[in-house]
Image 1 (cartoon, rainbow, N blue to C red):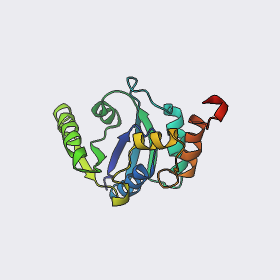
Image 2 (image 1 turned 90 degrees about the vertical axis):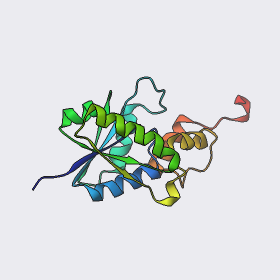
Image 3 (image 1 turned 30 degrees about the vertical axis):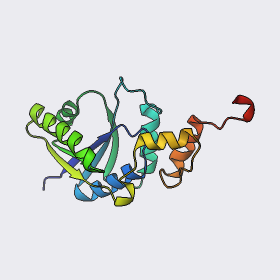
Image 4 (image 1 turned 90 degrees about the horizontal axis):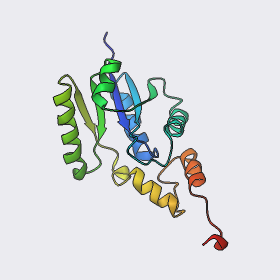
Length: 167
């Protein structure tokens, strides 16, 4: 029997409950899921690829059908290198659809065998984005409903509280 493997890629800077919801749900749809961190050298990330990978591996260590990987460059080239053809993408709101549709169409133009499966997160995560998490962390807001404790701890290291003397 042929195993179905899919790739769920993103920057995961940082990983949040919306990502983890998508990963959990996608892992039930396919036999094997590769969560692949896209390293975009043109993008200024808060966490290094190694830090993001370590956090994801720690958070997903109990899932035997999920592995964490990294790539740089075009997703279609990564898929070809792994001999894979299925991509999982998340749609939080209608605004994501236009962007994700363009990416899926471009990927299919470059790699006609690719299939993109769109999943919607649970409603409570439709607002959640990594940029929103970074902003809340930068202003020392409550992260408990946004990210797991492991990620909150790492965010607090990136945004230490300043004393009144430093203001």
